[in-house]
Length: 587
Image (cartoon, rainbow, N blue to C red):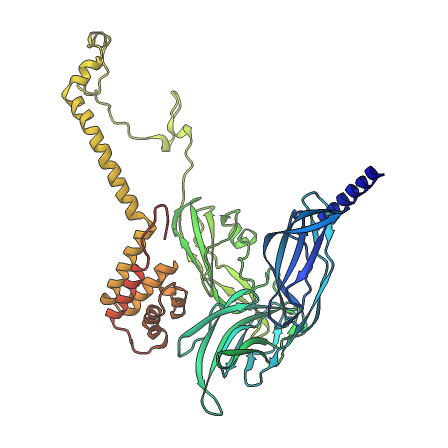
């Protein structure tokens, strides 16, 4: 009887352990949160681990992302059949960051977990409540667009202005409802402001930059305006409503205390029309907007069959919808009858520049009768006028030379064959070779020559000099190679470039030197550097202010407030901030 009880106890213990090994659960760090605030959703797997991340179908009312996993171990005491023992429970916790963007009761459905042994288990669903904080009427949001009648695929730029009357912190616009028929993307270029102050925050996980400016309040005093751009692209025809734009933030209430609040804008209603089919060109490829097209060819003087590089530069306002390629030239009779077009077609040069796309292809003239490269033609739909238009580059003049195909028969004239006119080449009389150098030795000279002796050769003066000088030459070559590699290292090239930029502030102007320095640090062309690009540098705010104020007069036409000496000192600070190059590291 005792043996039967022990067996039952053992089986019960194994059953408990087996049941514990299959346990998966879901927990929430909070049951009530404000809209926009974070709640941690955790999937807990006991005595096992998941083969992959738990699969969770989060609802549209939240923004969620995986934030990491951890291992936990707990020890508990169990009493079975009068016997006390300690049981260790190992758990793997998979955590997700969840932020609700709408108020109400939110349900996160079951998470499916595939264990390492192949079994799939599911957690129970969990719920939490999302609440809107206190509304703030003195913090206003305004959104404006050039027009509300737009076309499918057309991108318009919206200007958002948030007026702040008190100190705020920890703000987010991620609670703004965005309909599925609109694509809203942040702009990395902030509106211009007289203060030049720029801040960065996140728009649904993506960086966005806003200008900050202090303005006078209608009721007296001053207030702060934060302005940024959004690119809105309708994808579905019909009436589409964005918003209201909602920002949730902490507002200062005095004595270092903050309270959660929110502000909303009026909804933005867009009337979206489909792109008309009437008048649409047969080879229209979705380009929307107003553009210019310029082409360049290198070289313009070539032989038949030689490669000619054709570069096409398409310029327009961002985001340049549909400007991902150019028409296929191999199907254009103007090109395929005169050129052999590269089978690879157009390739886009990277990185892209704002408002500019550059495409490259290769052409080969089929005959010397080709006199020019025809214009490249691109069709676009201009939403400003509601009609299709044609963008055309200028033709490029070419000088193509004929090339005669040469064969072996042109080089070898067989006996008894009457040569043609092209085979009559000059045949100068061959003179005897100089016997002192070029004449091959006779058999008698070869037999009478002294045999090679290594001992005699090594004992000669040239051999001694060569062997003794070898190590020194090798060491000198190694030093020279090391110095050359060191001077060509990107770290040293950047320092030399910044020194040249310092001299430019004296020889030309503070703006020229600063543009060259900022371009070197960002890997851009000096002519493309704007004052706002300075904020991307990892430098002291005071240094960035001097660099920015040195460039702004070129953009605004104002007088130069920065002296060459101050600009040179700021660039020198950048150069010194490069630090010491570590071995094997490219700063």
